[in-house]
Each structure stands twice: as structure tokens, then as C-alpha cells.
Amino acid sequence: MVVDFGTATTFDAVSSKGEYVGGAIAPGIDISVDALSRRGAQLHMVEIVRPRSAIAKNTTEALRSGIVFGFAGQVDGIVDRMVAELTDNPDDVTVVATGGLAGTVVSECETVDVHEPWLTLTGLRLVFERNAG
Image 1 (cartoon, rainbow, N blue to C red):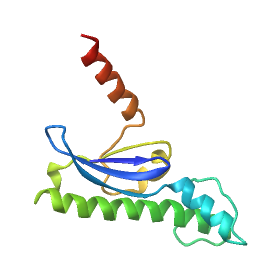
Image 2 (image 1 turned 180 degrees about the vertical axis):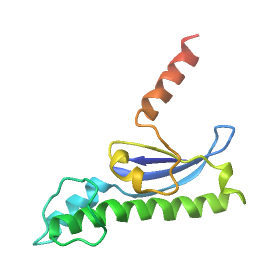
Image 3 (image 1 turned 120 degrees about the vertical axis):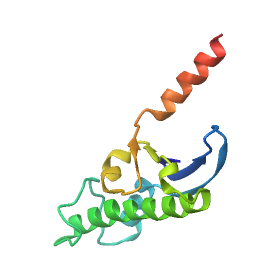
Image 4 (image 1 turned 90 degrees about the horizontal axis):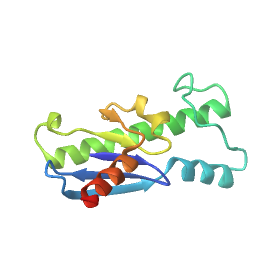
């Protein structure tokens, strides 16, 4: 399974044969943060970094807590549901995180096995090598 932290947060299930099984799409982190700052009169843009704790003492840390821990919880929840639909043994599934903001959230996710920031480029290289013949 691949979780891509891009404009949208996408979840893609791929079989052991490399076949696309299906997926899910959720709003991306940047889009969500942007929406909060635009629609929340007293909420502002913050740098997306790991907060000191889940219980914040100020608005900036509260936003960071909600963003980082909230998205980590979303990832774990969706991955758990998808894995349960794929197999009876969760150890059969490897979850790979990629995308621009994966590094910020992946350390808080319990379901992510591997962080591969260059997954798309690696895939494009493999396609090129297969077709270069």
C-alpha cells in the first residue's frame, strides 16, 4: 500500500503482482491548513512541524497538534480499514509513505513501514529502463 502526502493524501492498494487494487483520496495537509487559515478568523498559517505535545497551550501549537497528530490518525485509520479488506494477516501488507509532507507526519503513524521520498521518481526510472530496451 502506498500513502502519498501530496495535494491530496492518497491511499493506493497494490497487489503482490503489482496490480492496482483500489484506493482512497482525502484532502491534503497543505489544503487543509490553508482552508483553516482562510476560514478561521483567528487561525493563521503555521509551519508544519511536530508539536511538543498533543495538548497545546497556545494556538500555534494547537494547530500543529491537530495537523500532525490528526493526519497521522487519519492515515492509521484508513490504512487499518484497507488492510482488513485486503487480508486476514496485516503482516502481509507493506505500507510505504511518499510525498512532500510525508516526513512531517510519517514518524507519528503506527501503520507506515517505509518512508520513500523519491518513490515516483524511482518508478519513472524503472519504466524508462524497461522501455529503453
